[in-house]
Length: 403
Image 1 (cartoon, rainbow, N blue to C red):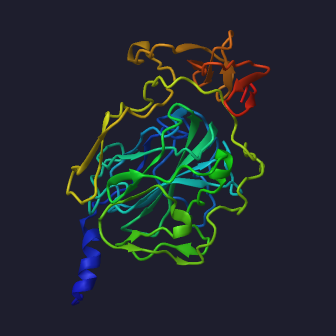
Image 2: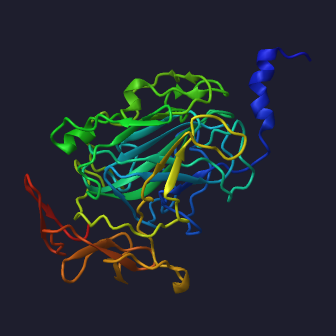
Image 3: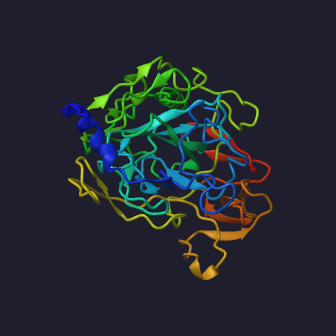
């Protein structure tokens, strides 16, 4: 049968895709269910019905493996495991104040990538579900975000293949380590100043961030036909955007209303959730970096605005500190990196619970191995298991132990 040239052009990327049973999942930040800890996070998309939205609902979906520490306005790395990248697509990074999000949770976008995510390769980068080769991206937690504990969501709408939505979630603690620096936006692979200032209260600024875009999960909204990258609606795009030229951007189709289940800027505390009007507050640790929970990220990160058949090359190279992530203790002490100066470890009874040191000078989160890595609180701040007060230039804030 004769096929028109346009049809062959559309089908060619599909023919280039090797057979695979896996996709990709985030490596950094470290997601809930990372590694071999049951129930491990798989690489499949969300169900077409949306039954497992958000965060691929499953037993113990929010089992803590690593707590990711993200200082405000400092460069962080988004990286992936797996090689079935489906020709790329468009991705977002969003935050929810709920530590155990439900369908009622509100997600706020802090970074959007249009095209070339998680890879600019026109097909897959390989067929190894445990391999690497997808691109690495840089993002920042902008100054609009108050310090506290959040759930971070990585969402991906693939370019080639079935119309799907991928979603991985990770526990993060936002600290003031980079506060005072303006957040950076990205456009066409070039870093430009973001418009992160101008709203006096950061809580209000966070609420003003756009809602996360949701499609392909039975909500009446769908991405366009296979072969084009998604153009996020303006109301879901935000100010911090990276656009990678891998072809035309196509808007979604259907009833693509508010992405969050609730249009309210502050979520209620739904059953099974841990959210509220504000993120759980935490003391501000010193900006000393912690060892990476995944394999170490390089200090030099590249942004990649054009396709490449294998590994991408950069037209813009930025040198920054690597992402700061708190790691759990290794079963083999010899494999555990030495802790940076000022950090200490100790035993703890309850995984996921935040603790104060006995003298109140440090805090940390208990990991699944019942080990806590303590890091110093900010100068002028004391962490107390019963009650502590962090003094700010504008006001005092009460911090309670056992977050």
